[in-house]
Length: 209
Image (cartoon, rainbow, N blue to C red; front, side, top):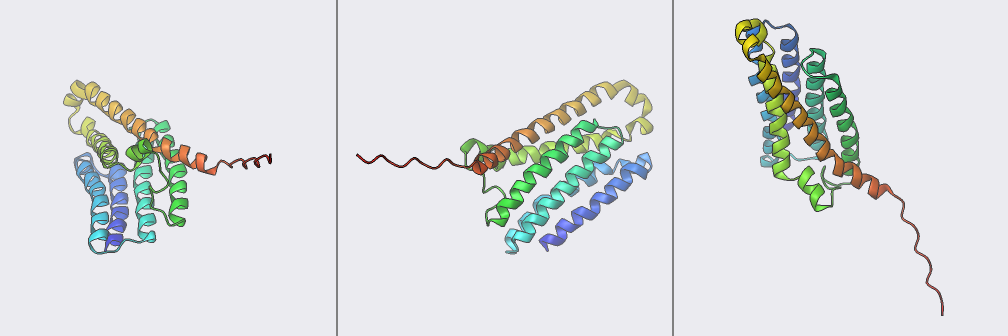
């Protein structure tokens, strides 16, 4: 059941993408609620997996993979539509490729996705409930706000001309905050991976008196 919910998120993503490109502006007003529903299902599949005892390595990898597909596709689509700068999409895709490769390696060793993080600060940034909730909420608000703004120039041109500057300023603030938190949460993963991969020097033999 949990994996079916995850698959449902994947399918709804492409409904959202099709609407962002081709739907009339009035229909695009549903894009922000649909986006929030897709993101909300990310918590539902994990809850269902725990309640039904359906947790597995496959489920963990599948969930992480769909999370990244949803996030990366949305950044690429918004960049292609001219709603976010292209460098933002590049940052998120690069970060996801590096961090998730490290996590997959940890899972293959029998660890949890966050099991390779050992420092207290790293755990707080990467696996702490507050930071995970903050990052998820920040992305949800950012995507939702941008999709909310997309049809407004066509639906309410006079209001858009009056309020577009502060609306776009809020969008930029959310985008930069998302990038900052994204990089902060990636840094401990990369640093601890590099530290663990560093070869240790053999200890010198003790001198015999």
